[in-house]
Length: 185
Image (cartoon, rainbow, N blue to C red; front, side, top):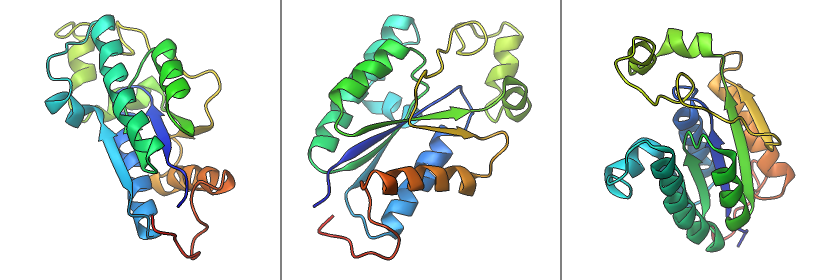
């Protein structure tokens, strides 16, 4: 049985964290890996952290709770995808410290492209002052200083970005090469 690991996708809202987490999850399952779990910001906030708002303290508590779950999963052999804005370096550093085989993926995308994409209309509302405390507009986002993988979703396809992540995981021997037999995972 291979070791568990955590792939932590961080980036501004709408950068493609969830899209990539799903793509990596699907790629791992396609290789026969059974113990794969995805933790996603929108989904987690419906159940695990619905009591939290968006203040710095609440955002930190959100990431603390997710880190706890990811830590348990990764220590028990689960490949865990975490897709969260996680805007603060200190909170991500704590996740790195606690989680087994932590891989930080910076999902980079220019603000201009994010504003143009704006699938939920949140940037438009933040720029109009209709919502406040929006990460990247009037609330800070601290980009990772030394992520293991950087993807540029404004210049790469989902397949290209996914391939970079999969290649990194193969290089660390965290996943079997494509076509290799998968152990009881």
